[in-house]
Length: 376
Image 1: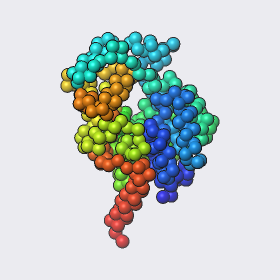
Image 2: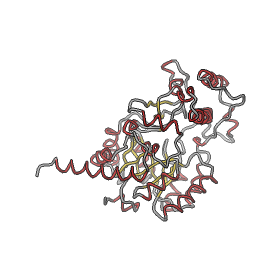
Image 3: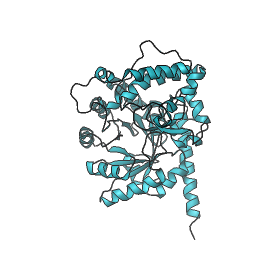
Image 4: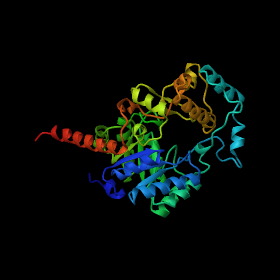
């Protein structure tokens, strides 16, 4: 496929693959797409090791990194806010609530439960960005708001385009005015943090909004896209390509928790929900006893703000994943993970390279159908 975006990034097909797994990133890049490593949860030292490994695997082919620096979070703007000080803001009743939830599913609560890090507070954003820019990345992406000035400045300094995820047309306008180089319009069908507008509506809204600004900023479509025909539909609406995430969770290379993979393969498109029970912000994930427990409208607990909710949730959910893999029934009921509504079309474990190939073949078949539908 030839397009301006393919030429800009030196790729064969404008399929961008977000993954927390370096193996997926390298496999997609080597297959002609563009892998993007979710880097937020790493320490700077860990990220350097991951990117060095990718460098060795892709032999100069392009890839990128995604570093989340939220525009809003608990403690933002306050001086000397440490992880411990944030932990002190977590009410005891929330810790008790989690212990009760575990006990209700036959899981013994830990005497001194661990707290997760504050990666979603953006406090390591500058350090991670410095590490990323020391490698030959070709894209840096940010979510949950306009990228910080230091990210935009670093992108210009190093000649690395900066991308931003948006869930509404007004967000796209803010991003373009801030100076981002690539917009990822992510519909509510997507896994992870999403808004409420569907992909089919969001793509043309965002494109029109950008054109009204007189800007020439490419748009990648995201949200529930797990097949080439969906990608073709997005391109028909004006998108320059697709940004995908969920579809890589069931690839052979992925590091998805074993029982979660089983749940993903068995799930339908109706088995996901937007819940703030994992991070404190609405994010689409598999329905489970965990997500039910954090639905205030159904008698559940109101989640804490970002990053406090993730601090109490992530260590527990990792423990749940380990127990679920061992066959613990209560843990299997609680197990959940970020995934979009496209999960209903994900029903087989396959290599990432094969997923790329199927995307291309399905895309070509869809464009041929569209071409054949036109009068001769």
